[in-house]
Image (cartoon, rainbow, N blue to C red; front, top):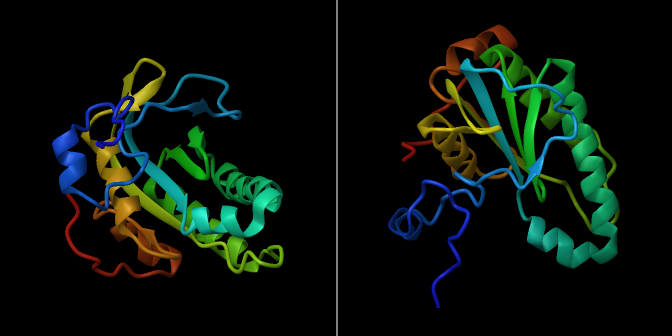
Length: 192
């Protein structure tokens, strides 16, 4: 039985079958527009951030009804970090966020702050540490309807899907901004 690929935008079945590490939200149309978005989305050179809780299926199974309060807290922690530097929440899907920033410095700052806050959060018994992958990519923000489209969105989602555990993986455009924030990039390999 082949997977249902409806709603996967520009990704084709061959690409998805070939790339087992493809992010579950790569190329998808936003299923839940942001609650914080009140105006139109910016265009031009932007930095895109995708997040995803590592092991969220395990967390749902372990916590049952307790997963609801955990995901609400996760969303609040991330939104606080994104809002603090002017991030614009494009959409959420389950435990994943898609956020856009006017600068790479703001995006890296938000991602680092979010990771620090998540690490300091007293999660409920049985949850362990809530680990969130984050991928950043700077590129052209092209609108298609009320959402972004284009290769740069796919690249950002692929970068997020390629990282593991508590990592923030910036693209090469974001990397020169890292020393300004007291961080150094490291190589994790090529992304398709």
